[in-house]
Amino acid sequence: MEINNWITIGSVAAVIVGWFINGHLNRRHEIFKRKMDLRFKMYDSCISVAHILEKIFQNKDQSKDTMDTLSVEFIRKLEFCQVQVLMYGTQPEIDTINRVTELAQVNKHVEMKNTMAELMHSVSNSLRRDLKLKKVKLKDAP
Image 1 (cartoon, rainbow, N blue to C red):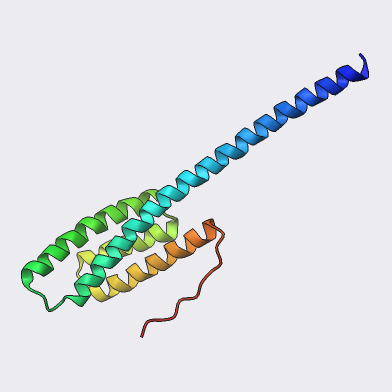
Image 2 (image 1 turned 180 degrees about the vertical axis):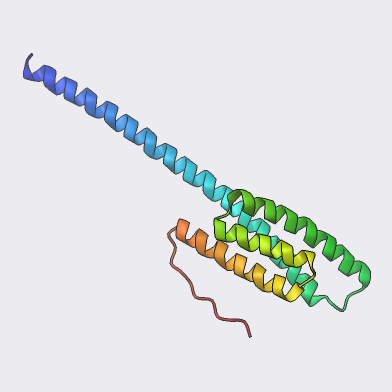
């Protein structure tokens, strides 16, 4: 065989190898994007639970009907959040959401609020790590 034939074979082999590598990298990127979409959905569900929980704590002096409505909404959103975390969360996040639901069942509201804050912090750190963002230090609320 002549050198021109070897050059052609080498070029075709390089193109084929590059094609497979590019396909593999694209697949990894698409999986990463899907994972982030699901994690953002989970994060949104956690935010809505934390938001409703804060409303409940701020509106303790409201009427019984308002509190009942907020409680029903909180339970509904907590259930959705728990499913999201169980499906797409890390093990520490799953452990934390399970503790939140256990505390909700026994009406330990202050502990539940603190544990929910712990979950939000854990999810935030996890997302920052996945997105390769710098860690931030939050000031303790007064």
